[in-house]
Structure formats: C-alpha cells, structure tokens
Image 1 (cartoon, rainbow, N blue to C red):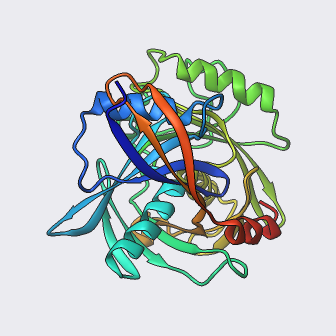
Image 2: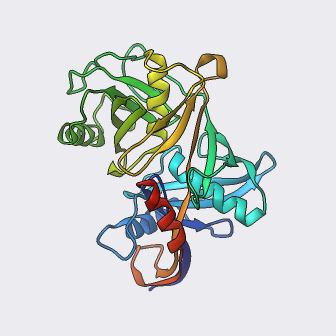
Length: 315
C-alpha cells in the first residue's frame, strides 16, 4: 500500500545529485529512509540520484540539521556537496543567510556565498578538523598514512588517508585511470578486513589551475563529484607539499568546479568549500516507506534558469 506522499527537490552540488526532502516534521525509521533512498536513487526509476538529503530540525546549538542516505541505503557521516543543497533549503525555510548545521557525528558552518557565476546559487561550507588518525579513517594499520603504500591494499600507489570525518584514500596520479579506480573502489566496497567501514577512494591529478578529483564513493560508486573527497584532496595536497595550506584553489571534477581552502594545522585543520547548490526541479511521489514501492512521479516545478546557469559554467 502506498501510504505516503512526499515532496522533494531534485538538486545537485557539482553534479553530485540528490532528492532533497524537508524532513523536519517526518518521523521514519532508518530502515524506512533506506527503502525510500533505494527507490528514489534507482537510476532506472522515476528519479535517479546518488542519495537523498534530509533537512532535519535544529537544536539549541544548530539552526537545522542534515542527514544523507546513500543510494544503497547506508548513511555516511556527511556529504559536503549535499550539505550545500541542504544549507540552501534551510536558509530559504528559515529566512537566514548563515547557520551552524548538525551532522551525523559532527557539525559545520554554512553561509551564502557570492555566485560562482551569474545565476548560480552558491554556498560556503566549513568543516573540520580533517584527521589522519587511522582509527578515525577506519583504516586498520599501525600509523597514519601520508603518501605511502597501504599494507594490505591491492594497489602499489601511494595514498594519503584522511577522515572528513568520513574515510578517504587519496592518491595523486599523473593520469586518472577510471578502470583502476573502479576496481579499487569495488574492493573497498566489499568490506575487507583492512577497513572498518569501507572507504571513499579518489585519484587526483594536479593541474596548473588546481586539482582534478575523480572519486569512487562509498555506498554509491563512481560519482560526478564528492565534496568531502575534494576537501580531503586539498588537505592531502597541503600535507604532501603540493599546495600551501591557507591558499584557495580550484578543484574541478567530472561534475563541475568548486573553490577549496584547506587551512592546515595552524587553522585547526579546517576545510572550506564554496560551490553551487543548484535546484533543478520539484516533484511529488507516493511511496510505501516500508517497502519502497513507489507510484507515479509528478513534477510540480521546473527550475530551468538554474539548470542553464550551471550549464554555462561547464557542469
């Protein structure tokens, strides 16, 4: 029985796409949210997305909160591309321009930012501290890994392991081999003993204008973009001397660019990302939260001007 009608916004940050729901007044179990996510994210279904985003109620310390549920129904610690979209929704719902946001295991500062390009809604997010402790990364090795081979990982490449707080393995490469990245991501996704809870894997090409990042995202697969991966890449570039901590760089990826500033130890190892929060269309769908069975999708509003503005950026 389809007993719930939900309204959502299809949105994306750097091409990392989501169905965004205002869940401040919705009470569902984790299993029910997982079922909804698997249905809405199914690329063969009516919507298709990398995950669902939930705008949740705030508390005394936070204006609002965010949850993200991956396409496989799992819930990561955070998602910085998604955070920009949730932040925009929270700003619009509450009539504010900046906030402290509650995340699963941490929090973040968010604010409206000057547009990356005309017509591109842009949000700045600051999180941290980024960490390299193996326990925080969920990596079962004796010491932090900074540009070194990881014992037990089926790769001879040098990696840097960073918690954002979700786990990242970052390798700087001359050229990104997507097949190699996919194979290694699949291995991590299988839940090997080396990893406490899988990991996000990124190959990063240093370029004259910044860092190009391609990511195999835990619970999703290859993505157009992963915000925490872009942040982890910038932090790793600082740790390995490729960029100066405290500088702003452009970080493009297959879905489009962001601006990233990694502050390093002198700045509390915080990472700031400024990027788009593009709303593409609004819709409604009937869904059974117990099974995920869905009815027909109704598109209630199209935001073609935002889509065109982002398209002009090259995303």
